[in-house]
Amino acid sequence: MLTKRVIVVLILLLNLVTGNAVQAKSRYSVDQLTAAFIYNISKFAKWPSTLSDREINICMLGGKTQKISAFLKRVIAKKAKTQKITVPEFENANALITAMASGAECHLLLFQSNTFSPLNVHVDKKKTLLIGQSIDFLHQGGMLSLVLENNKMRIYINNDNLNASDIRLGSRFLLIAKAVN
Image 1: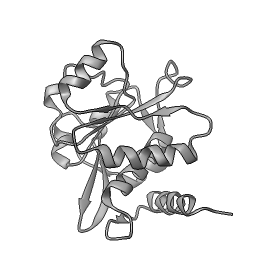
Image 2 (image 1 turned 90 degrees about the vertical axis):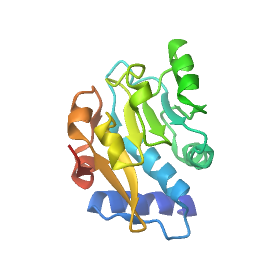
Image 3 (image 1 turned 45 degrees about the horizontal axis):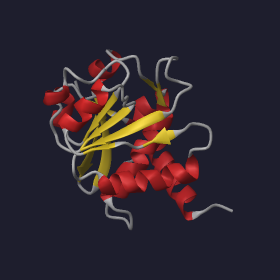
């Protein structure tokens, strides 16, 4: 029997595959939708083979990511069966830089703010999928952006930035993301 969460994930996947944006004015909050999108993006992403057998770290940067992180952790608890996924949270760029200097890795990095510039020299853009929440983020070095437009969540991609990395996204995902270069 399908649970409510499974149905939500299936609806999101259906919308991803068909190219339809997901209505944010549903009974799900923008934070819940963002968490579902982030989880599904992690399933479409392929990292270099050296990272494939390790846990995936979906890092959250910014003080306002707690709700997204909490929703994401709930989805992971129910869905992630074969791959260990963790959700480290960082209050600010300095905390992330300090953690990375100590060997922490982020496979996906969600930026709460619309700026990537301060981290440009500290993040390994070859193996970290950089996700923001504005189109401007893509022009600053970001790879993907989840943007709320007309009450719909849309995925934008900067193919140049993504192609400069060692991360590959599934072809279905690339079909539904709107390119910004």
